[in-house]
Length: 135
Image (tube, rainbow, N blue to C red; front, side, top):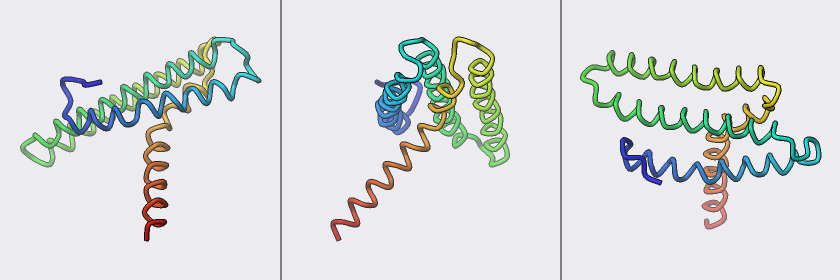
């Protein structure tokens, strides 16, 4: 999927992370089946959390691309900080909704917010061990 207002690099990272995040969502849903059955709390939480993760990821990519175009370091820092506050608000709003709505599982909202860090760390570890075995 190509998002027109983002660079090729951000699009590549988005296409790298989204299938893995959706697979992680599927694993959480399957793991929750014995406890929650087919009730909608977990899928709705995963949907909300994944939407917040996606928005956070795209806002980060967009703001980083635009910050390097700023003329001074100070203006770039202010720009990145303002987008940091926006991203923090998006994640906070998702968590507030998850904790305050009875029909949404808050843990299922929280977990997708951790997927990018988990996916990148796992990918680096796998590459490290593959390269170590070749030597």
